[in-house]
Image (cartoon, rainbow, N blue to C red; front, side, top):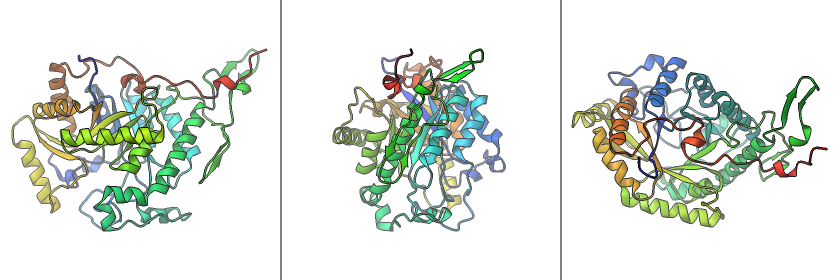
Length: 407
């Protein structure tokens, strides 16, 4: 094993990340909305010793366009709630991290913080969270309480322009994460006494109001859920441009980025360093792990992955387009790429399987053994929490020092 082990995560989404993945030969479209389908995928990821899996979610139907709904009927539409899904599979797993997406634009941070804290308790310390803004104006109609900017086609073609237009939503998201973090800290670790003999269940001096006031909301606290096993569940985000890089630097433990080659990875990491400096983050005291995204089609036989993708492109009527680099090849070739890109300074990778379960199986049973043979990936879990997998310390509650001494 190298001194700095490679971290691997998998992004689970419907039948896979290709729009026509549900039509692949081994796809299971009839099972997409069943608990067993997701439980089987997560169990396979855990057999592959992956650090964590992520679950996609949104507040509106999927669409071919990033910024507006459509009426297509030849692609998967519909989601299960990601936080509830993660909680459902938590008791069926023992080590792998579970990181659902939960929106912060049309939801209350108190509710989201409670849900993620509950997931951390249910999983024994393996919860994470990907806070997501609602970038589509149409999604606001499902809630009827506010409007959000309508992005144009020109916006979508320019990630920096999108970031500028959506900056108020990212600022609000940073406040939402701060509220969640304070709520997770609002119960000190030893606030629960649970002494039936004396009749004392909690020490009220160790449960704190957070008294947060921001531009969009104020939250008094405390949380209704005791402090999570990890202290602070992992917070992650996907970023493509300056504004979301700054959000990651202000709020997150892990950021997913989308370079298309090693040179691009070096440039993105430099931008993240600049964002950390601009926001005043000391990454030595509070590390920000950087994961690159890749959408992958894998087969042991050379050329087979490219042929599978070409068939799916034909079924969808268009060549696959993605914000992330699209890789087709063998597990060995992907291992070469990951280890090459890693030299830019990346901590790990979040892989998007083109089809499920096929490409997940190629990751766990092809890529992982190849990386293990090269001494670049674990051969067994050495921790039981998600923070432990990523070698991140468990933070102390920010409120612990304000408790008066016991008389």
